[in-house]
Amino acid sequence: QSYRVAILGATGAVGTELLTLLAERSFPLSGLKLLASAKSAGQRLPFQDEALPIEAVHDQAFDDVDIVLASAGGSVSKAWATKIVEAGAVMIDNSSAFRMDPTVPLVVPEVNPEAAAAHQGIIANPNCTTILMNVAVYPLHQVQPVRRIVAASYQSSSGAGARAMEELKNQAQAILNGQAPRPEIFPHPIAFNVFPHNSALNDLGYCEEEMKMVNETRKIFGVPDLRITATCVRVPVLRAHSEAVNLDFDAPFDVEQAREILGQAPGVKLVEDWKTNHFPMPIEASGQDAVLVGRIRQDISNPTGLELWLSGDQIRKGAALNAVQIAELLVQQNLIRSAKQPVSVQA
Ligand code: 2RA
Image (tube, rainbow, N blue to C red; front, side, top):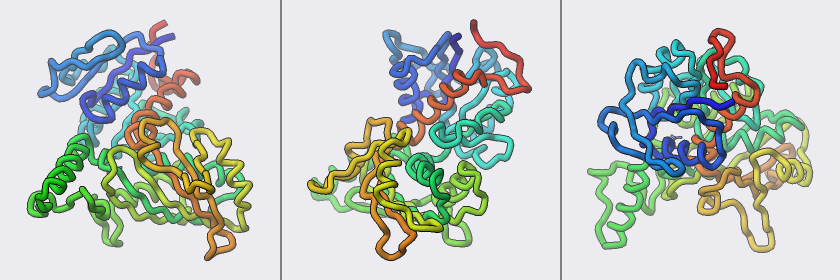
């Protein structure tokens, strides 16, 4: 069987990675449609040995589509969700629009693949920091339930989009040319700087990015009262996020056992050379599918605590790869149509 796929938001950093991954992973395509705003219509993007046209999204754009990979922001996902589902397609949405909707599965294929079966036309792709941390923590949680997670993220500029990656390069070049950073233009200068994630703050002093890690992890793990906190920081790195994660359990978690578990965990690559002090680095994680995990060690302040460090490609596993893996999961389990939708896949 093969399927008709549309990428909504094809010109963004994640959209172009989706295109790359569909080709790299030989997704069974019987059709591929690139959709974006009217201003991008007419451009072409390379796909295998063709140059596919970008079309402006419109009401009938989804009538001949089975799967929509959406990465054009929450407002665009919300605007087109009904049309997509009514057309009988399933939307795998990379925005935060539907992640906490109780009727929408929030899926990391290595963690909760079974959740996908409950979809009613929409499946949400978690936030990048959530995906990376959940891939690393869940294998340990399966052996001994984690009671508390304290996460600190070191997030690349790609999380703020392709333009932010250019800003990082341009700001760095300007500084190397002797020009001082200009806070009046960039209130959060990123070159040679870090800053607490500048998403909206709640009345507890947490930003949206931090609350995404908290709320999404609880939903994906299926532990609504999981004790979790996060501090999210933007760092001058191009496209891979890193995270320092502290885990607390009811009883001590043997470090060697944790290392053995993570060494075999799906989606994880153990990177630990204690002799050369070589551990996960964003520059090595970039372009890889795996979440690199290392520096696994006993928390010296807490006998039931464990510390680990990870790096993962924000655009790839943090967004586009996870979405394509969800699409592959739907294909493998014949879940392209929810119970409410007629079957119309290409034979
Ligand atoms: C960020 N996770 O890094 C958000 C959006 N991808 O800013």
